[in-house]
Image (cartoon, rainbow, N blue to C red; front, side, top):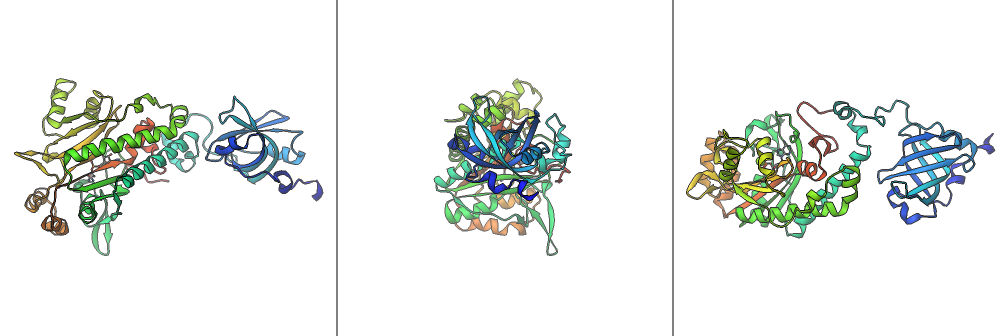
Length: 447
Ligand code: 4AD
Ligand code: MG
């Protein structure tokens, strides 16, 4: 019996292992692909295997006469998601998604998947898919999003690194709040209360006084009670902070930075965006140059003259207001000088108008809402002490932060860009839950 069984060495000999994404470079050669069965179609003497390996999809065609009989029989038993090594000739094929097809002559089963793979090639509800997120991420659409996210993160870092910003990691466990106490995740730190960070900003202000231009990049946490398409409880934020900068400076930096991220991503992933995600990329092409700027006052006027005649001055915008405002522009719009009472304690005041602050939000087009929040920071210890009281924060917790004003206080400004909202916008997704491999949302922590 033994001599009748075909060995792997026989069938895969001399065929280098190649990623599907690289097959073009091997046209006309025998290669081995290692991957999973995405789909199999049985045509009797022909077996069509759709293989995926994370870098792409390729159809492998096994003809009964080209493959040893025992292997051909085994191919006929393959279930969806079975792991395989397939060897064959790379043949150009205009109809194939990758432009190539694999003419199979060798095969090795790595592991046979159980027959009840939960995600079938049909429509599934989002609730079901979210509970299967560990498997759902294997789909073509989800891998495209994860790839694009990685490129967005690289573009973010490249731009900042090339513009002299130093990456300084800030702590995840913190003794106090940065963005208000209502969304803090509390934990215990050796008998004392501690919180998961909402933002690295306050620490950035300290490191900016050491290095001039810094950024932190990491996960941030907010116990958001709202169930919306823009809110996660754990999200990634990149936060640059610049010494000797004011509000106008950061608006200029933000528009260059965001334009670079969008254009770099578009240049690299035009195909994934158009073919897999069906994104209308013409909407992204114009994201460059300077972005329009309106004050909060003007924004309120626009709302009142438009769909929201009763919008009261002083309130923060909700998602529908942001969408209404952003729809009036073909690129992101800056809204600056928000009411001081609607923003965090550290904001600088506008001169002669303390009721508004030197804050700025960037609202993305097409209803994606605020993707960047930032502003110029208060420089005077007295103002910050007063705000700490007004916001009912504990003075003790912010002693170190006040030190920054006591020893060489300078005008400085910074901002935070939310990665998931940026990914949702660039990819044209209708919910942030698909922008991260394992989203954390209100009351959802599985898997
Ligand atoms: O506007 P935010 O709260 O600003 C800050 O945290 C500042 N300390 C940043 C700074 O100046 N260094 O948050 C900044 C961005 C938002 O514009 C949004 O893109 C994102 O973080 N964000 C969220 N993304 C997903 N889910 C949430 N719950 C988010 N909350 C904020
Ligand atoms: Mg904000």
